Image 1 (cartoon, rainbow, N blue to C red):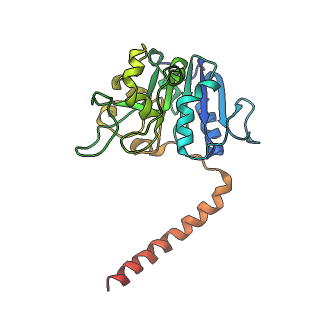
Image 2 (image 1 turned 90 degrees about the horizontal axis):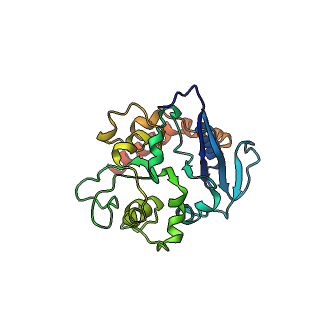
Image 3 (image 1 turned 60 degrees about the vertical axis):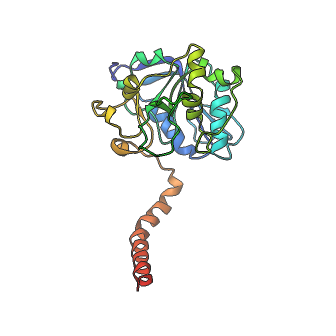
Length: 261
């Protein structure tokens, strides 16, 4: 474990985010992730340089991501073009470093590590399995990846396909549908026993003995108290929504009662 009072030096890691939405919030997430850590580089990959971008964050251009499918494809195949270090730590506006003191050097032993996934309930359609039907417990878009893994989909000519739910998800694509290809190439995806100390997304029994993770994704369960960044231009509308919400609920109840008469 590293002492948070001493700046953690991760010079072989690029802290990165790619987005065309929630750009202000993403910049704030990058800044929050930099607390107590020296990265090799910090980059925002987007379609237009924000005027408020701090000088310590480098702007790198990509075409505008018009939908979530664009994002997933570019992460899977193009992220490698923007990374010049041995590893990338990918964050989002809703998932970023929260406890830098929880970093472990053993995370570098793996080519992909993210927050653990739950075991879906019986009978529920899911994609958390490899091509052999084995459960896959570790994936998640927010996480640490090696440059070798970033380059792999292109080099191996992996075909971009939808999952069983008809969706394009780059983490499912890599960690489930092509887990066997990644491992056959000599790379490793972190096991649950290590990933539970790295990140938390869903509340699962296996993380109960972990007091706090290095990073998080989504504000589920114990993550609910972590920071949420809001673009100031939306604050007036949020205030209006807060005032109107009780009246909206009262109107909906009135309509339900009237329709039931």
